[in-house]
Image (cartoon, rainbow, N blue to C red; front, side, top):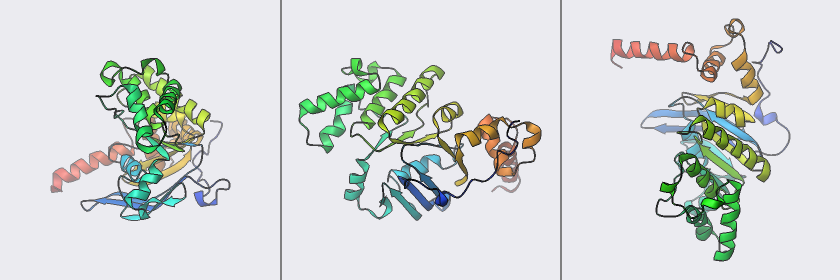
Amino acid sequence: MTDPTPVQTAAPQGHRTGPEPVIRCTNVAKIFDGRTVLDDINLDIYPGETMVIMGGSGSGKSTSLRLMIGSFRPDRGSIQLLGKDICALDEHHLNEVRKQFGILFQSGALFNSMTIAENVALPLQEHTHLDQEIIDIQVKIKLELVGLREHADKYPAQISGGMKKRAGLARALALDPKILFYDEPSAGLDPVTSAQIDQLIIALTRQLGVTSVVVTHEMDSAFAIADRMAMLDKGRILKVETRQWFERLRDMADAEAAGLPEDERLIRQFLRGDAEGPITQRRDQSAFTTDLFGA
């Protein structure tokens, strides 16, 4: 191995020099029905970067996204978005902040009764005072960015799953957001289409200078698009590091990895998709305890 020490701890995020974060989560906790889903999450996301938030099912990654967009409010802690504490805002002022970010939902979330162009035009019609002629031009520009201008008059039922994702992305771009949130952008897509979506995310981030936050458990996509990555497990952040750090951990020799702390061995198992490791050992032990004691 050319780098035998890929698991050194980086400097705390608060010591980072440069621009202020566009998103700052500080000691964020979320509790549902007495169960802690997120536990003291601290995460800074900086202008122009692509942050991938990853983790297994039930790790809290989707909840963290919903907190960042204001769909949920944390039970503890604060979330700053573009310099504003969204936890302290009423719905009216929160909606003003929401105009500055776009969301690509897992399903695309298009309105089936509207054409692709009409779906993209909707945010402009609802949140601006632009003339329809200007809106039509903006729609063409956004559809061109995602390669769908020639399909503007089609309905969602007439296009493929990958095209629906791109149409949803065009709509997310309608108001020229500063931040783009992606919820499992590769879910349900074949490998080729998934790779195309990854390249589109990279291209848009570079062309438009937006900050991208991507929630995913698809490792091929994560390593293709990320600048930095955050690993969630059971509601806590195990590590926030550069993509290169996670690549070195993933590719480390087994003999060397055996000496790592448990959290880093857990991350490595998740990155590699190994059948054996701390994740499966924990599941097996939990299943046995539940069977034995009934709780």
